[in-house]
Image (cartoon, rainbow, N blue to C red; front, side, top):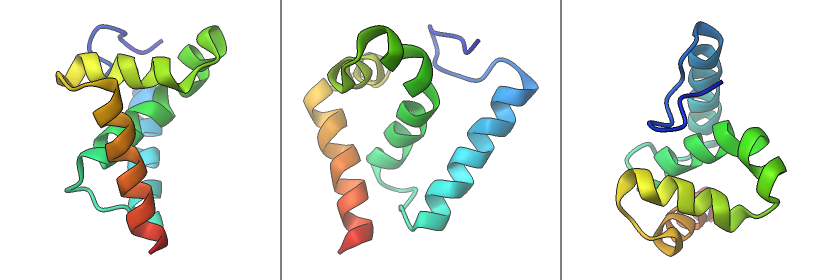
Length: 88
């Protein structure tokens, strides 16, 4: 499936899925200039593959944090902030 080293789509279907996820987040009102927007896209895209193996969201945050050189806590906080910004 997706290239686990770079967390990027490797097939046309995966690219279309990532475009759909991006469009959906924008339609929900999540601002693309927030770090959490990028993290959310990847968490949503990775969720089925990684979450079923580990059953922990903290593991998803650590996978994303490794790619971006951030802590898992900051990834979680950025995602939470992006979501909260929509609901306020």
